[in-house]
Image 1 (cartoon, each protein chain N blue to C red):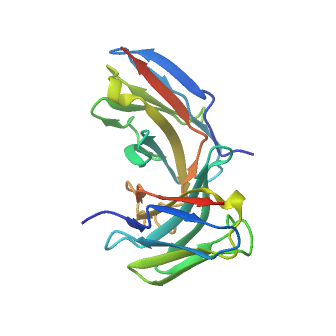
Image 2: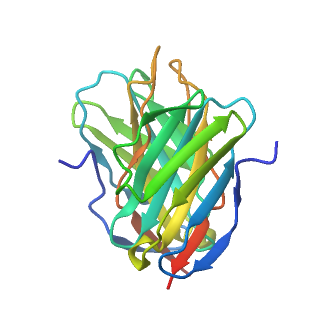
Length: 118
Length: 116
């Protein structure tokens, strides 16, 4: 079974609109971290935002926020006021078992290709 | 710190040749990961190290692939012999050990491997 599921292969959004990129995850580990990365056409992987499984509040980083719904195992990325430079692939990832001990590698979803239109 | 440094950035080789990809993690990071990215399979974790010790190599596709981390500042991923289906972008990433905190992995620029 897939650990990270991103159901939107591609999205077109008008500039300045808000965007929600979906991510659901599957784990039985109580300790895990959820991450979003951006990969522009140049190919590098850019870390955007992180949410820990024990965090009480949703994470925010500038225009990025993470809508964390633990019971539903959902960690959607919200980009407010989208910009042309936001056009890229976006990957949701999970890292299990890191709190207080060893950590596993990041498991990535298949990604969502976001295109911002002027 | 210069970030995670990978070399070469691009590699074109003939089928059957040995290929060695190199990685220098961020100083002080004790986890190192090797990933492969293809259109078909996305980002796959091949192997990761903790304190220079391989922890999980279950993602290594077959015996043609091997990885080493002789010290905290250097790792290699070797493919011998290479095949056209090994063509992909190979990423190295490093991170700190997690302790109820943000332990994001920092990625190198990747090595684009083409096997002809």
